[in-house]
Length: 93
Image (cartoon, rainbow, N blue to C red; front, side, top):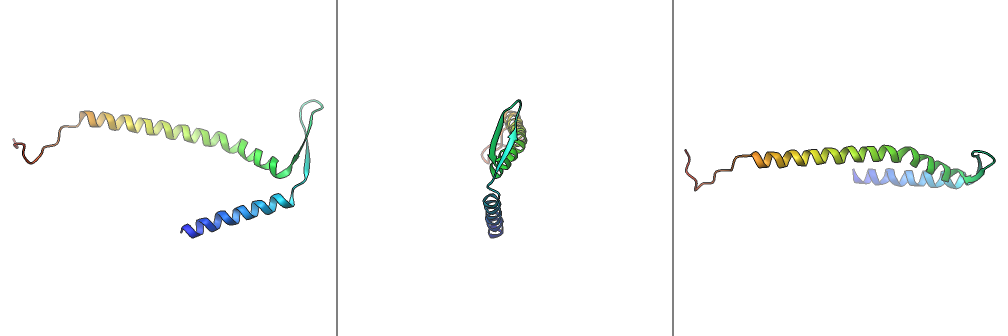
């Protein structure tokens, strides 16, 4: 299974490298006013991917942090209210 995962990532990296090398041309972006920016297509795609991915990733990590914090608080509360365990030497009533 590890081999298939590695093969997938290698093929994806090769595909991205080929795409970037074949499309390494300038694109002119018209920003506000008379401002224009020349940027390479793969760089533009990477920036757009990160603009879409990062907010979702940050929200997911924040929710995971909140769930872990609540779970730890619940475990601490259960440990504090749990009755002591009986040992073999303690008398059974």
